[in-house]
Length: 387
Ligand SMILES: Cc1ncc(COP(=O)(O)O)c(C=O)c1O
Image (cartoon, rainbow, N blue to C red; front, side):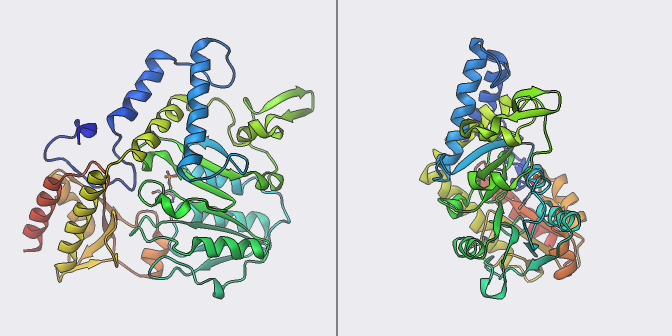
């Protein structure tokens, strides 16, 4: 694809679950910010700043539109990444709101560890729910009364999705709980699962959805009353006296400032707007190419007796190990051939190592940059390795 024309023949990038390759229009939007209107947003009155403000506002609106959410219900803030967003929320909840905190077994360390420290700090129990093979959670097994629930909407191991997300959100709310979704892996290729969601907050990473390095927080306005702002500084206040301040976030139009302390990554926010446009304009052919490449590699891996595939179904993210072969060594061998894949436990140590007792795995994760020749090459090399 011409938007990835910088990718050399023979280089096979299979680490999109970590960071997507960025298409040209996104890189150009970032360059344009630096070369045409490099300026601080939301503070300056000169023309460059007004241009930045306009584009930043467009990005906030675009991500809500992407998920079919309304600005009267949700406010969009930007941070460093998913991990930062989750921690920012969990570290600022008032005390005595929650009776327990709940997460699931297939979480990335990002929510897994943040819920651990949250439980300790708040002096409340933490419960780890079991995800079904298809990614759903059997809600009949759990009591969400006054619980804070933090779970992913798609796994970074095998892409399995929280298929019954609507049912969970509903039950959590009925029982007086709050639910935060880690959408790091869902927004690029499974965003439909979050459309019109009623979750209380969504944290995600633009760098996993063809955007620049940037975190996204989509926070339900109703949640704001439960947050005691403590991570605070420039860009967040309308007035300051010796020992008192007025938060800008108290005004509904500036609610997003509640989580944006100090100068923001304006260029990245602007370029992220371009990434959303780019994602929305993927054609049927682009999607078919991605699906075909995923399926071909999945079918190949599935057909190999020595390959233990974690996935039950094809997904742009797939993990496996090969009997009798160290995954780190396999990763190094693939790297020598120009194939870039991840090895280890991908920050999901608890599930992969302590629940499933798998050896370190290898993960192939795909993006729209993938070419049929990449799959030909990967299969050929794996065939050679497998003998
Ligand atoms: C499901 C999931 N959650 C959270 C994260 C953390 O994302 P970041 O490193 O951008 O904070 C990742 C990263 O791979 C992820 O896959």
